[in-house]
Every structure is written in structure tokens, then in C-alpha cells.
Image 1 (tube, rainbow, N blue to C red):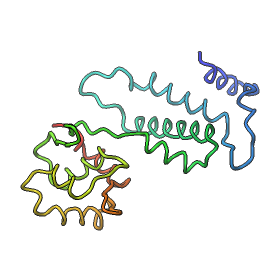
Image 2: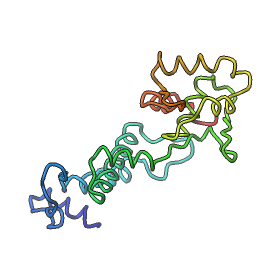
Image 3: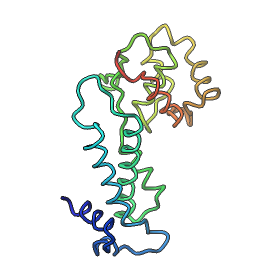
Image 4: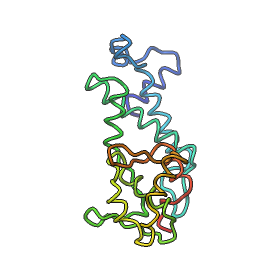
Length: 197
């Protein structure tokens, strides 16, 4: 059993945490509860092994709530490691993690920078969400989006972008670059437009 998980078991039995977990300075700028990291890892480990999220057969999606918990917990743990190692704030660490993590949309195939959408039935707004989901924090310019959408959809592209930005708040434009918002990510993931068919 890994040390962190073993230490967590000892904590549940009322024993003191292993010394290494208590060595962290406890000033407000640096401190996060040192025992919470191994406990969080234990939650991820238990969900993976005991909630049918590992070795799934074809066509079976993991439980959405479990997957959301695991992704958020791993995101937090990575941000903690970055924060502690580099001695930076939690917000700065989260920005670094967001830059490192790239979301992949199976419905998009990349041909040397040209993003091809593999589901011809998607509407123009869904295509924009999928493309910006794939691009992550890098975002995309109007010209890039225009070149990636179906030629018939280019005529109304500006209007669609304005609706997604102002009416639905699913994208944001700054300095000529469009990025997907948290609301847009949620819409893309829950509407199943990321799958090829």
C-alpha cells in the first residue's frame, strides 16, 4: 500500500499523521492542510477501483458525477504540487495547470493545424464550441474559425459568434481571439457534441 494511503488509514484509526505530512510551514500564504492531499488521492483511488470507472467496456460511459469529482480532485492536487514547489499563489498555480491541460474533442481531427470536424450534422454554434474547446486557452481568431467551419456557414459566422458571446456567454473575445468560457465547456461536454457521431 502506498505511504500516503497507509498514512491516511492511520489517521482514521486516530494515530498521528506521518511526520512528513506535518513538516509544512503553516503560515497563511503557504499552507494547505497537508493531510488533505493523501486523503484526496485515496478518494480518487477508491472511485477508480470500487465504482466501476476502470476498464470499462466499449460504449459504457463512467458515471458523470464520479468523473467530475475525480477530474476536479486531480486538478486541485496538481495545482497544489505546482504551488508548493514553485512557492506561488493558488491562483497562479491554477493558471499554470490550465495552460498545461489540453482538452481533446474526439470529433475534431487536426491536420497540421487545420481542424476538421468529423460530424457534418453539427450546427455552426456547436462547431464553434467544439473548435474552441479543442483549442483551450490558446483560443482562435475569426479567420481561423472561418477557415475551419463549413463554407456554407461562413456567411453568418459573425452573428453566431456574437450570439454565443453576448446572449449565451459561452465564448469570450479579447484582442481578436475567441476563447470558450466555463459555460461553453459545460455545454459542450453535456450536449455530447464532442463525439464523432
